[in-house]
Amino acid sequence: MGLMIRSSAIHAAGCYTTTPIRKGARVVEYTGPRIQKAEADRLYEDSPITYLFGIGSRSTVIDGHGAAMFLNHSCDPNCETDESRGRVWIQAIRDIAPGEELTYDYCLYDGDEDEASCNCGAPACRKTMYSPEEIARRTRAGKRRKKR
Ligand SMILES: [Zn+2]
Image (cartoon, rainbow, N blue to C red; front, side, top):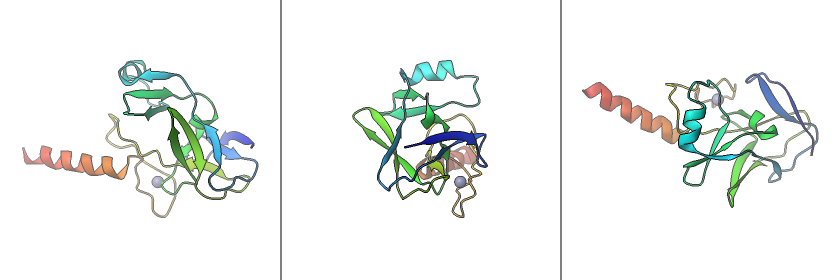
């Protein structure tokens, strides 16, 4: 399987395939050191961009290194993440042609930013990289604040 990192219309750099990928195939592992979430928060307190991936109960995060960290978010992605025995794989959810950019739905659930805006261009774009559950949670929290 051939992967290539080059500039992307979605965000800065993206990860592209140079070979066809079959639906269901594991494309690349999300590799990197495992660190505790509290440590990650300390390390990246002032960083606008992080490549952290919560695993298990999410008290541990992968501090991403390697090709997988270049995959951009899309609301209409061609890949998903599959966690298996503490390892995380990027897996194709449809057949992908050579030259296509690989994407998955980040479903962000934790962040200090008010919005992590999305520019993926999909017709069904949520306009944010937060998960639908997190959007609902934040909306409820906002309503509670407004009532006070
Ligand atoms: Zn989007």
